[in-house]
Length: 116
Image 1 (cartoon, rainbow, N blue to C red):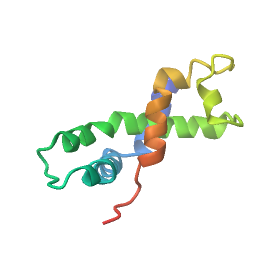
Image 2: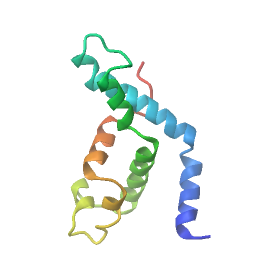
Image 3: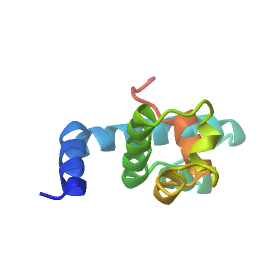
Image 4: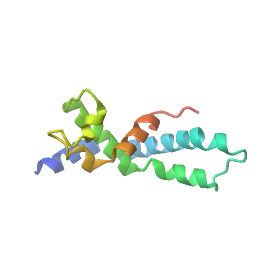
């Protein structure tokens, strides 16, 4: 079996679709409350901000974020910015997976539990 397939197999056993969907739901709910609720008096599911918040945390992006966290556990840099640096030996691994701005957003607002 190819190394990539083996890694994906173990990753998918650890982070099942159920777990990813739960993270997505908790994070989208938190994001919409944090960034949308304060801006609108009549916050409803049909509003533009609510619809945008559903697109922020997508299952595939969460999987990529978690994969990067695992990679960061093996490849240590003193600053997270260096993972996206063109000066790094590993400069094509992480930038090819996810953009730095998306990583920062996920890092700041990914929720592992429901606060309600």
